[in-house]
Image (tube, rainbow over all chains, first blue to last red):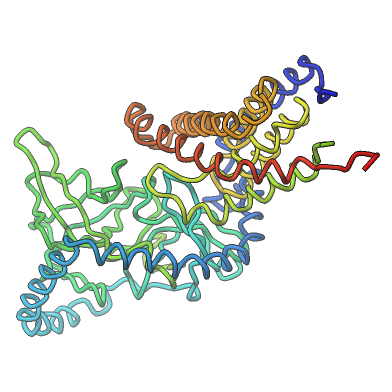
Length: 309
Length: 170
C-alpha cells in the first residue's frame, strides 16, 4: 500500500504560511535591537544569546578535540609550503636588522617614557578569558569567549591579547559568554594610524608624541577586511607617509561618537603599500599581529581613560 | 514492512542542527561549509507526509538559526525549501534510486540556501561579494560537495528514519 500523503492543498498552504513566517522572523531580527547597546536586545537576539550560553560547554568539548587537529593540519601544510620557509628567512634578516637598532631604540624609549608619563591611556581589563570556539559562517570571523556581563564585559569593547594587541571587539554579550568580532571579519572597522617603527613600541603600546604633532603627515585611515579576505587600511591619502614595515595602531578617533577603541592598540604591520597616479588613496595591506587560529586567551578592555571625554 | 518514525526524523534534524552550530565552524573553508541540517532535512523529510515534511524543515531551520547565531529566518526558509524539494522529489522516486535523487535534492537545497543567505545579507545591508563570483566560486562548489556528502551519508540517514517492522506472520 502506498504511503499516505496529506492533500497537496494543505501542504501548499502550510508551505506558504511558513514562508511568510520565515520572512517575518528575518524582518523582526534585522529590525530589532542587536544587543550592541544595553537594554536594546530583541527577542530573537536573546534566543541566540541563550543558545550560545547553553552551548558553551558543548563547544568547549569540541574545541578541545578539534583545536589539536586543526593545528596539526596547519603544521603539516606548513611543512610542504616552501613560501613559508622563504618568508621565515626574510623574517630572520629583518630581525637581525632590528636587533642592530635595538640599543638606539632602547635609549629613545627611555626618553619617550619620560615624556609620555601621565599621558598614556590607562586600560581597565576584564578577567582573562578563554576562547571557547569559533562561530559563524563563510562570511564571518567570530569567536566565543567565556566571560560575560557578570564579569563586567559589555558590547562594543576592545578585545586584546597581551597588554594591547587588538584582536577584535565584543558584539553580543550574555551572562557568561561574549561573541567577539575579529579584526579579520568583514564587518570590522576601526580608525587607525600608521606609525614608523621608531615611533612605536608594540610591547608597551607607547607612541611617540611626535606622531600626533601637527606638522607630521603620518597616514591615517579606516582598518577593514575586503571581500577577498585582505586586511587593509582604506582612505589613506597618497600624500601621507606609509611604508612597508610601519606599525598600525588604533587612532582612537571617531568624530563626535563615543570611542570604540582607545588610541594606541597595536593591530599589525604594513605588508605592502601601492598606489597608482589616478588613485586618490593608497592601497595598504596589513599583516595582522594576531592569528585567529592561535587565539587561546584574551582580555576585554572594559574601560580606559578618556573614553567618555 | 516499513514505516517512518517522525520522532526519529526530528531527532536526526535536531542533532544535525547542533553539529552545524558546534562542529561546522571548524570545517568551513572559504565559501564551502557542510550543511548538515539541510542534508538531514532532505533525507528525514523524504518519507514523511507533505505537511510533516514542511513543518520538520521549518522548525529544523529555526533551530539552526537559534543555535547558529546568524541572520534569523534564513535557516528557517532554507529548511522549508529543502523539505519542500524533498517532498516533491519523493513523489517521483523509484525504488533503489532514492539516495542519488535525494543527494541531488540536497545539492539543490544547499544552492538555494546559499543564495538565500546572500540575498538576506544584502537586504540586511551587510557586505556581499559579487554575485557572479559567489555563484561560481561559492554556491557551485558548496552545492556539489554537499551533494557528495549527502550521497555518502544519505543511506545511513534513511536507515535511521525508516523503521522496519516484521510482518505479522513472521
